[in-house]
Length: 452
Image (cartoon, rainbow, N blue to C red; front, side, top):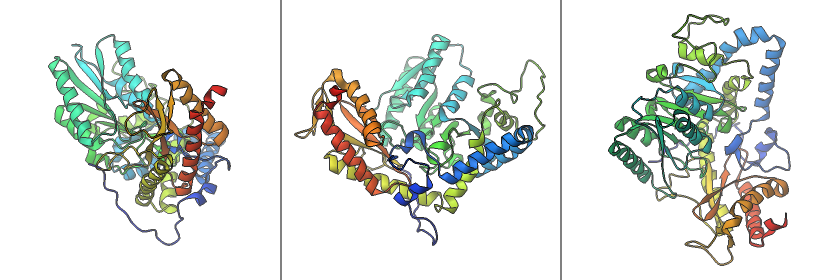
């Protein structure tokens, strides 16, 4: 059920990926940027474009914000709509994926019969899971949040089956599965989720699909018109080389009436209770598009950089297909190499779909409480009571002493690490990662974390 990625050769004159590209990014020369998936990064030329838009805003604030900005914003919307293969009228921008998830959940009207249930998976991004938690707290029982437990490694079919069983259980309880929130690529672990198939099952079962594609555009191929989710959001600032914060928010026309306001409510809101006007220039765009064009005064320059980021990826790097092919290949090979050095394993299923993305997850030779299946002699065991202390020590030590960061997480009673592939990395960077992790794990075994 993985997504097949087309391959093509590099035309003459295009740059080669790898370490030589680091000079084109604003990294500290001592820093090894192995965690692109958390906050992204931008090439220097896009940083310059960002500042150019900011300078234009300051030069003539009213002219730029009122008149120039909407036209430039439309250019970015059009460029991104082409990348994600969606109708232009369905594509707007919000600040980040969490903003998009909040926009959906806080707009939906929940039934008065107290039967609506929000579904998430246990791998949900914590901030988005808390959006559903907030609904439960705010409505005091009118909405229920049920979490579907999944433990990796897992086949895609098992995830779909777990969802079907959860919906059946909800219906057996006399309730209604109203909306399901799920990922394109999960955060921790960083694995491809069977999101396209999940959308189909949601439609089959009458459940709204809220796709958190925070890790999505720029890392996996997207065809939103074909996938046809009910709501979809994806951070452009993670993998599309766009400044923070910027996310594409896709809502098909059929569902736009379900979201009557932005967060915060601003000039684009069409009130039922009054005919209050707006001081903004008139527009012939749809009410939905106009609503997201101005949401209070803030720096929306990153939105304008989307078209520039896409152009840079096309003209300098060779385009989306070439970029994705490199990221996937480096992710699979690099993760395997780190696991070889550590004597552990890469998180994967039998069909190899979980690593069809740009993030890989490697088991560390560090256990909690006791060693598990497959443990080798010499691997460290951390007392249960030291679990969180070791987690924080490893994270901070990577930053302070090794000038890098890789995202730690737990599966069962074992520590795992997530590493992000990127166009400015190559296999040498994974060798660096392996060396850092091997030494760090050995220091855990010696209880160096107790010496702080």
